[in-house]
Length: 265
Ligand code: MF3
Ligand code: CO
Image (cartoon, rainbow, N blue to C red; front, top):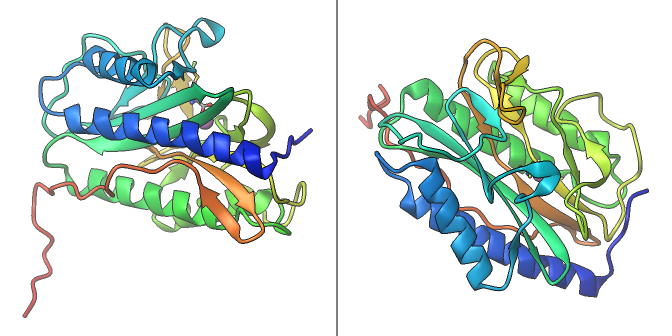
């Protein structure tokens, strides 16, 4: 059952959305060569608690940290630890916050220093896929229109969409109905209606869409070792269309290792 939220409940969700966004920005500001993912986790947890929130992920099915920090070929659910960031890395950071009884969920793939052109393009396309998915979040559309839009953008760029990980409804619980795949034919599934709130989260790779689960039983990487990206917003469906309840850090303007060939004449 898809739980629809009242206007007042959506305002509460917007407050948890503000806190999770603020936390993601703070983590982004701390990202530089040599910082460990455990340090980023600590920054996030402190900030969330200082504002009266709870890190939703901590203790969720035994998950040991407040954020997921997934470098390079890791797609999602990377457990923060002693890994020090290196020049040229990408790092997907996923954060959930519970505030006033409501959860917001948000993710962003950051770059560490200068990126190779392919990594740069991956982040760009994943953000475009998120924008395309969010744009479908309007009353009268069907659920699968979201995944179709994500898949279309991703595959047009030659990248792969992960099949086994999905977006989801979000509210008093982190994971509510429906599941929201990032692929599929359009025009299927429930009709979208005002008051539904969804976590839209494309997870894509440069190569295969197959993934592997690591021995820690959490972290998931691309099977072929290709780079992966993950961007996520919590989005309310309103009569006027999608309302993004989370904000992201400034769009990735990663430095490229090589300048693009095109030069103004
Ligand atoms: N944020 C993830 C999602 O969108 C859930 C993370 S699982 C956790 O579904 F254990 F890390 F919380
Ligand atoms: Co999510």
